[in-house]
Image 1 (tube, rainbow, N blue to C red):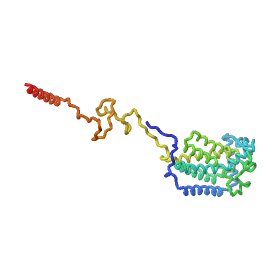
Image 2: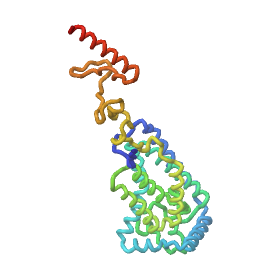
Image 3: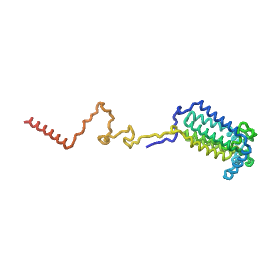
Image 4: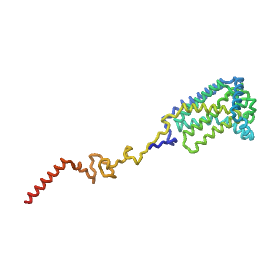
Amino acid sequence: MTYARTEPTDQEPDIRARPPLVREFLLVAGLFLAYKFGRRAANGHVEEAFRNAGNVWDLERALHLPGEGAVQGLLLHSQPLIHAANTYYAAVHFPATALFLVWLYWRRPRHYLRSRRVLAALTGAALALHLLFPLAPPRMLPAAGLVDTGQVYGPTVYGQTPATDTMANQFAAMPSLHVGWAVMVAVGLIVATRSRWRWLWLLHPALTLLVVVGTANHYWLDAIVVGAMLAVALAVFRLPQSARTAPARRPRPDLWGSVEGSPVPAYAGGGAPGALAPAVPAGSAVPGAFAPAGPPPSFGAAGGSADRADAGSRATARAGAVR
């Protein structure tokens, strides 16, 4: 019978699978800088971004998706709550993803390699979509009637004039990398850990989704699109076979001789049923052990005649001695 383990063990990480630290730092930093400069290169296209925003808004209404204003209305009931949502949007996105990669690198090197590849592929695809489909966020769309909570209540990571913002491209709402990275963090930690509480990591992408919609930085469709892109990346970059838990085989006590090293009944070699053959190497002498008395007597026709002749000769010799 085969017993397969479905959860990672708490064994020490395989340091042979851990890539060089300096190389990984330079690689991740280079990818981050390439993305930031790529977003800035995609800045502008104001008219196209607002035209696409109107199309996305109309499509959401045609699909009967809930309005983003319903989520924002819940946050606006409490100023500390909306301030906490703005802080979560501004301060959790990058640090949470960085800590996720650092922990995987140190504790789950093979899972780290897969997660880094997935995040790099997802970010590169998002940058390409930002270039092809500039999109103004709902906080800029007059038809949405939403509040720019970052500018009104703070804190915010964007400038007051989006068209001239040199720090970020505010017309890159599609897709939402806030949601995409948060989902990847949750999925990566759930797969790489074995705690019964690991499913609570799903709270991170859930909170992120509510925050990006409630602060009017993203549409529902931004999260749906990034979810589809992440699913494709996870399917392409699968865990290597060596990182998966191999099935462990255990012997079945009811199958004699099915596993190497299992006891073999003595009657398999001609002994009495129920007796186990002693494991004594050939040619060794063990005190108190009885050596086999040779092959059993033969009861064939020829063997029987010889035995009877020998018995007759011994009987004649004894009779002569008596006379």
